[in-house]
Length: 88
Image (spheres, rainbow, N blue to C red):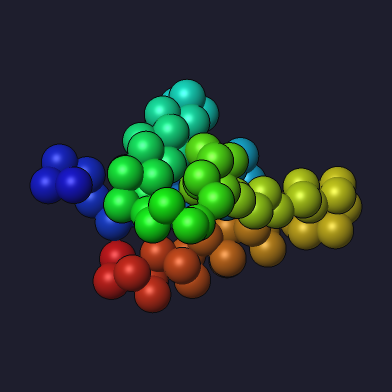
C-alpha cells in the first residue's frame, strides 16, 4: 500500500467492482477448508460436522452496466467522486 497512490487504488477498486475480487479463487477454497477443520476440532460431539462450503465467502458481483446506460463522462465522474472520497 505504501507504493501506490490513491488514484491507482481507486482504479483497482473500480476494476474489482466490475470483475469481482482480485486474487486466486483457490485461496477461498483452501481457507474454507482450514476454517472447517478448526471449527470441527472445537465443536461439541453433539454438533453436526461443519462442511467447507459453509465457510466459503459469497462474493456479490455487480452486473455489468449495459452499453449506453452510462456514458464515459458519467463513469469518469463516478471514479473521480470515489477518488475524492478516499482523500485523493
